[in-house]
Structure formats: structure tokens, C-alpha cells
Image (cartoon, rainbow, N blue to C red):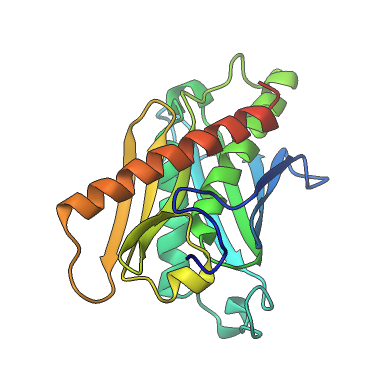
Length: 238
């Protein structure tokens, strides 16, 4: 029995709320169970120096956690004067995930920055951030079309992410904190709507896991992301 009582292949409840931020060109608040992340997309009419004059855009991300997103207060990284290695790794992952489904030539020379701020953490924050950021990015591009900055939406598809793991040696979908902290193995899958693989991050916490178990986790991830893709489409009105 999972701590949450869910079936092995069951997602937590998923709520995607587009337009959650007043001022951003695109935004989405995503809730997956108790995990809650606010994703905003900000558009700027310039690109980093390494892209100037190349006629293509850039999509990047920043990630952070509010001090009381977890069970006890965490120190603000700004107060320490630098980001943790975990934060840097996660925000790079979010950027890679979103760039995988964007035609950057179609953007022209603009930058979209996705800020993913964790309001409440109960496992799977990076996965929720990627899933919600796609909705925010779609909304930002639609805003640019309405303002006649873009002729068409540069998104080439959907991308979402989900965690899977071995709980008491059973493959399970969408780990919450209670499971993630005690799992025998856990993995994050970043997949596209067309079935492509953007990234897989997997770790054994004790004994190594087998290829057969990895394939079982992948099958769960495909089922879970199929549900997330449907939720994304509903959030953008499709």
C-alpha cells in the first residue's frame, strides 16, 4: 500500500490554472497533490550575446523555492549570495525541456524567461514546474500573436514531466515526498506529446535496479504524461 493510498499507476490530483499572475505575458499555477508551483513567462525583445544577429530566440528558466515551501523554513538563496547546485541543475533542466518543443527561428530575436517558484513542496517539484511552464509559455506566445509580435505560435509540440520510482520494490507513478524519501529508486521522465524523450534522470538509492524495472517505470511515465498532456490542452482551451 502506498502512503497516499493511490494505485501504483495513479497520478495525484492535477490542477492547471492559466493566467494566475496579473502582469506576466504568460502564467500558470500548477498543483499536483500538495505540490504547488507558480510558473510565469516574461518576454523580452532581445537575446543573449551569443545569439545576437542569428535571427533566433531563446527560452530559459529560473527556479526557486519559497522559504516555507517545505516542512521547515529554508534560507533564501539570495541571502546566501548564490544558488545551490540543485537549483542550477533544475532550472537548466526546465530550460532544456521547453527548448525541445520550440522553433527558435520562428521566435525571432526575443527571449522568454520562465520563472518557476515552488509555493509548496511535496515531491516532484521539477516535474510540476516543467508541466506548468509549458502552459505559461504557450500563453506568452499567444500574447505575442495578439500584439502582432509573432505571426504564429513557435511551439512545435507539448512537453511534460513526471516522477516514477520503486516503492517497496513495486514500480509506482508520481512520487510524493513520503515515497520519494524512502524509495528504492526514483526517476524523472521528460517526454514530448509525440512520444519523444527529452531527458531521463534515474537513481538507485540502494541496490541497483534492473533494465526490466526501468522499462516498467517508463511505461508508467508514458501513462502519466498522457494524462498531463490532456490537462495542458484543457488549460489552453483545446
